[in-house]
Length: 91
Picture 1 (tube, rainbow, N blue to C red):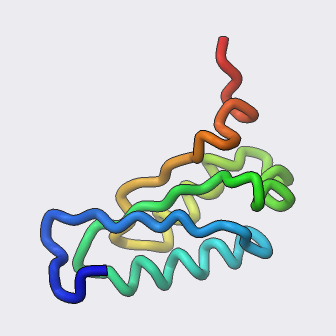
Picture 2 (spheres, rainbow, N blue to C red; picture 1 turned 180 degrees about the horizontal axis):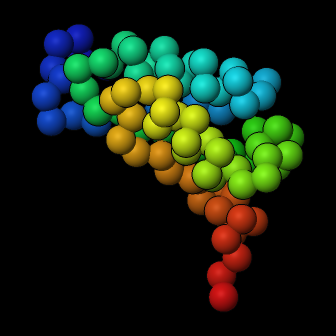
Picture 3 (cartoon, rainbow, N blue to C red; picture 1 turned 30 degrees about the vertical axis):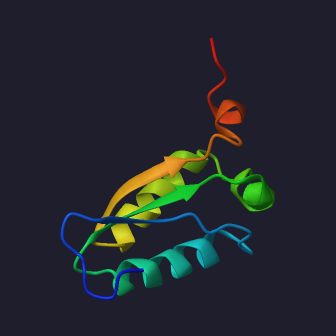
């Protein structure tokens, strides 16, 4: 990552394979803190994490709210195309 450039850059974290919901939020908080002077975003919903996010009542909403409420510079949350149709089947 650029050591000093922070203006007009959005840093996106696409980490996966978390033990659970709390570990995702905790790791993503660290990412947000590391790039506190910039906007950050996250890609979530990977197959590797299905074991825990599939147990949530509304995974996109619950994950998105947790990230935006706990990370002050979070501006974007993207659901991966790996599993998007499981939650939002095409009509």
